[in-house]
Length: 119
Image (cartoon, rainbow, N blue to C red; front, side):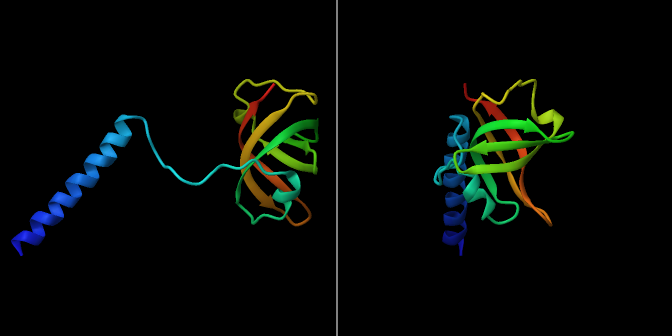
């Protein structure tokens, strides 16, 4: 019984040390790729799926709603005022947006968490 306890403590110490070393180096999760998706792909994804898309915001439709376009089509996006972080973009700018798919009764949109200007 004593050997099992010592072995368990050693395993915890080793794994804790590995995690501490990775955190000290600024590391984190490895594996999985963040893939840039198209508007066409986003429209067929499950509700609340995390997505990354690149394209242009071509018009403002409401208070926090905009029309986003890439080479495969258009989709409505909702960008809360605080998500802009002072960024200014126009229809000729290319942006990358990160958010979640939001299937409504009549349409699908992306609820944006973060936006960055690429050009």
